[in-house]
Length: 526
Image (tube, rainbow, N blue to C red; front, top):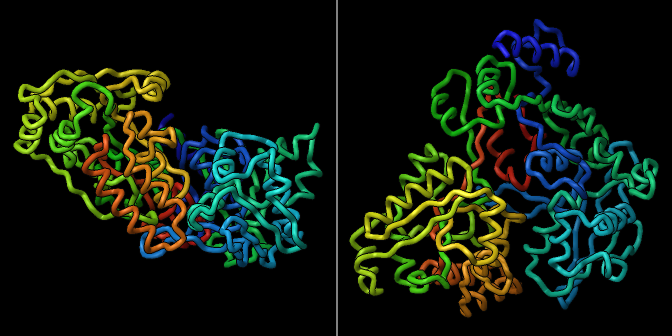
């Protein structure tokens, strides 16, 4: 599509959707946030169903949960949302929540009955994310005994073990924990679907916004919820315009036809640095990129060989050359901004030390090894760089590129030698990562790498149940140090989320800080 046609169509959409004249559309409306994004990933906006990152942020905008995440000094901390307060039983397994005075977007009061129904509905539907609530002991089979209505404003949740408070509340922040207007949902029930069909494309929540319109692969439009209990959103409307091509998003942003370009590439961002009236905003993402080693395979059984590989890698080149600087050097398994984050990066490219470790391990002439990765261009480039790095210390590596489904199937079966992969997170607590990267018994990444380390397992379990936050931090510091010395992972970096943003937008960084967990559209102004 030509540049002229693209601009004209977008002006027409602004005219129809936002009710403004074409002459006014050169700058987006003062009371609207207009964003260019690829919306093909939008499948359902039902909170119990939606599990994709960008659609989940729309769900968060139109629904509130009991608690949510807040950016405090660039760390994510729990804050109350619909729960005004909560009390924890002496055995630390039952949480009693008291709801604040709040209304749904149609004016109905939010009640504990709505909350109980929403949680039980989610469990009954058994959608992919249900494992999160199952993981702390509440399931469809036991929900009646573990989710109890107390009165109009309070209800309780009982978990199977006394998990640390930040774990419980962190899991409850997910959009599946959204409180739905029970009466409205059941008014639209068809064949016992509990309103799923209707909620796929409509909202019945108590968030800052209301879903006005979703035209698939064209636009998603939100408007301010006039009954919202909290601070009024600074911008009254939020429009996601479907623009699949990153280059077209850039064009619209630079012209001023949109306020935000959502899907730019690192290379485009580099080209745009210094562009008049455009800012580049980056925030820590909730995913890690790493090299994993099978600790049951040949030379990789030896801790010193694994350490040699960690010292052979050029981490700076991975970040600066392959990712154009759009990544954060985080070598621990806990991302920056999470409870338990350890600010240590002990590894840098040191070929002399790497060669010495190989000699000490009995491999002075190196060995042959296979590096698996998938077809993502960044991953292939990272694997190729690691291949070159290992060659510098005498390890002859061969890169094998596979379909992602095949690669991960082999990984889960402990069938790899080395693998370049990534890991996304579900709640901002060290436990989410400790279970994956250090606890063999959890059946996740440490298991896939056949790394069964009793000290790591013990510390990971202690961290799950320690009630004192400061003691928990000490546990994760010790676990991280042990993992650095013994673990089968070389962490390349923590990913970042990035946007091209018009300079007149205010407070975008703070609003976006929790992107993969939360995005505060209502905090942005012009």
